[in-house]
Length: 252
Ligand code: IPE
Ligand code: IPE
Ligand code: MG
Image (cartoon, rainbow, N blue to C red; front, side, top):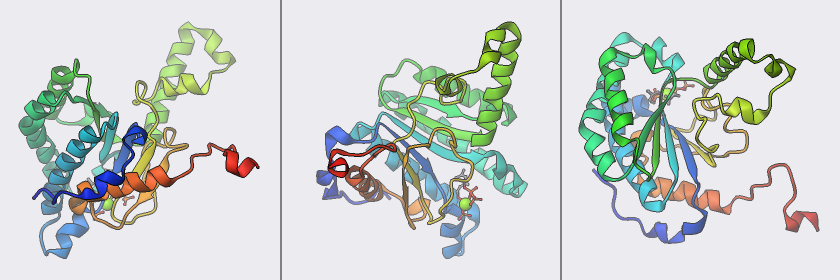
C-alpha cells in the first residue's frame, strides 16, 4: 500500500537535495518474522518500498539512487532464499522496466552479475540497454556486490593495464582508483541510509562513502516509505558537511 501523502515534504529545501543516495535495505526477514510469515514475504513486501523510494527520489530531483540488494556474502543464505530473491528480481525487472523507461530513469547495476543466472543476466542487460539513453534519475542496484570486491577488481584491472603501461607502476591517484570501480561514472553518495537499526556498513561502497552522511533508522525496509525518506533528507539538510575543514562559524 502506498503511504499517505506527507506534508513534511515542505520542509525539504529543493535546492539542497542529496545528488546521490545509497541505501542498505535491511530488515526484510525481521519484518516477516514479526508477522509469522516466511522470510521471503518480507523481501516481497520490500519491493513496494523500492517502488516508493524510487518514485519519491525522482520527484525530489535526486540524481542517483543506489540500492544494496544482494551482497557477495548473501550467497551464504539457504539456497531457497537466494533463489526466491533472484526470482523477485526477475519479476521486478519484467514488470517495472516499462515504467522505469517511461519515467526517464536510467537503470544500472553494481557488482559481478556474471555469477547470476543467464536469465537474470539477460534481463539486466535488457534493462540497461533499454534505459541507456534516459537522462533522468540514475537507478543502480548492487547485486553480488561488496566494497572489498569492488576494490580488489579495480586493483586487478589496474595491474593488468600496468603490463602495457609501466608508468602506472610509478603510482596512481585516488581519482584513477575511483575510475576503476563499479561506480566509475557516479558521484560518491552524499547520503547513506541503513534501515533496521544495524550500525554497520556490511561491505557496501567502502571507498565511495568516505564522506557520506550516514542515517540509520530502526524502521525495517518493508516499512520504509516516502515519509521516512523525507525524514532522512530533512536530517541530512541540517548536517554540516565539513570534509575535515572548518565552517566559517567554527573558524571564528
Ligand atoms: C535485507 O533484509 C535484504 C537482503 C539482504 C537481501 P534481510 O533479509 O537481511 O532481513 P533481516 O536482516 O534478516 O531482517
Ligand atoms: C546487507 O544486509 C546486504 C544487503 C542489504 C543486500 P545483510 O543483512 O546481508 O547484512 P548483515 O549480515 O546484517 O551485515
Ligand atoms: Mg539483514
